Image (cartoon, rainbow, N blue to C red; front, side):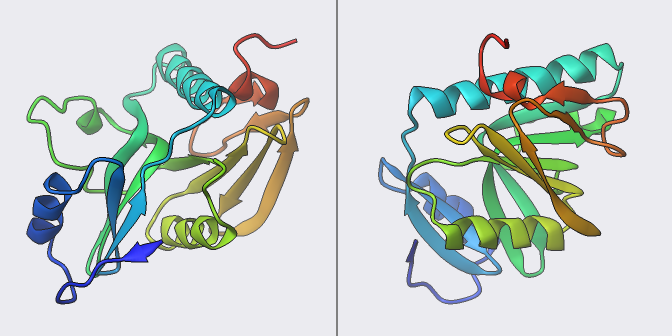
Length: 195
């Protein structure tokens, strides 16, 4: 991941201005005040299917469980921390509470971490990038971080207070206590039609 040269730490206003000026094919993140540029990821169909299916399953659960909240994604911009400024993109995320349902004022980013942050691995992700993002998620208030590996057909769930849990395609994934009653076979997060 390339690091841009600017006076540190970068402010939110500088970050937003630079994000608007970022060349096509690049995305910016602000990691503890340090501006980072990286190439925009183009995903294969297997990865985009996992993105769509995971989003759909979570949105359906919100509706069926009559939970207030929102599922958002596609590298949605999230400010995990204000001091030091930490703004990242997240593949899929769940925020709980009715305050997240109305974004008619179109904010530049979510200003609080989600309850659940989900990263869907792509060919361009390095071990270092994934570990850093997991660390940021868990350190700054995300209750669960899922790493979805569409190639290996697995999900690993990380929480700040326990050991990671590994789930294969045939296993049932739960998300207690953040998503009460949520239960899904991992295969359904990865395929349009489950067996």
